[in-house]
Image 1 (cartoon, chains in turn green, cyan):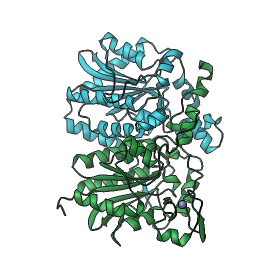
Image 2 (cartoon, each protein chain N blue to C red):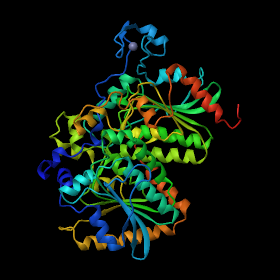
Image 3 (cartoon, chains in turn orange, blue):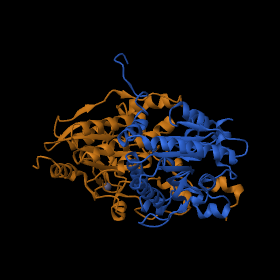
Length: 289
Length: 268
Ligand SMILES: [Zn+2]
């Protein structure tokens, strides 16, 4: 089947080729009056979509949202206190185009990095909250992403707080080379220390969560929730198709698929997310409300 | 040697694989132990117990196979979740019996396929990263060929990580990087340079503690020397109090990004 000469071309593909899968899929930007639902193809009034938590009222499709919107619909009003907001990445490896990419990402997303961290209250329960943002370099994990998440966990460990992380990521950030990979170990270490102190960690996987984030803190929660139909995987579907040279089964790598395979605790609709998180936080609170 | 030369050397079919290292360093003291106790036995990862001089150690290696038949059997060293779970099982066993863990890494990456996803490739790697960080016994990892991203890191959350001179360690394959960056997968040489994947680059970034010089032919001199420094290093680590060992391990990884992150200056 194989011979050693063609081996180099036919070797199994791996997660290294995973990046960029999502490069061209832009997050939803509400700059028009009407928007077409990618799932049911109906036209929806943008303002209706905004009022409905960016969920299609016809078919229930969950549109992608940016991190600030997510925080707004999840936490009690004015309770979010951001940490490390002004931490920014540098082009440490002098990687081609990276300086420019960072600049354009900052401008288009309005954020300094691919994750926003802070403390917040959810129906009165205090928690540390990290929310990734797909509009910043597709939520890729650079050293600052890893640093912010690690600091958030260290803060929570020190202050006996639970942590909730909303993930969305195309994976590691190639432009930071091996230092991006090291963030997987670094964040996992911080999660472990938090866990060893008996503290609660909830992850909410949103569309899409892949690569190095899936292979680290996204899958390390005590409780793992996911939004309906969110794509969740280690390798991206295109990479897998290229590797195995066949079409993937329908619903492969969706939140529902992971639920069936035993890797997600519950698939939760966006409208029920705040309530669900609040319930879980209260069930783990030391005061036992 | 340029970065692309090293990529080719690291992938060369005649390069010694983990089994060669295990045979040459531990001889017939090695007893292979199979299976993850959950799903199956992944032949892409070899593990077991051996004696290093008089010291029992747990040895785990990602195995690419030494000829075409073996390579196909071992899925070219691309492990499935059960491979990483087998490795973790053996590490937990090592912890129980206070044996040091020695890992040999040689993989283009964790496997991407339907079964791998169905059985939680991401979850398996994530669990290894988390558990290795606090495993109460010394861990030493040696990258002998390709260190392909998360699939390599899943055996490299160690107290020390060493690299053969011509091994590589990277977050993405040069081909993958080139096709994203320049939409041209043939520009692997340029991508190899940009990614900083050679042992020299990684040593200067503090990602590895030691470069193992490679003689022209990877012969017994190399293995004897390696055996000696492995024994010396793990015995020293064994003497450290566990909390010191684990603090050092945490900080070993904690440092990456602490310095590179800068705060926005007000004038920006
Ligand atoms: Zn719809």
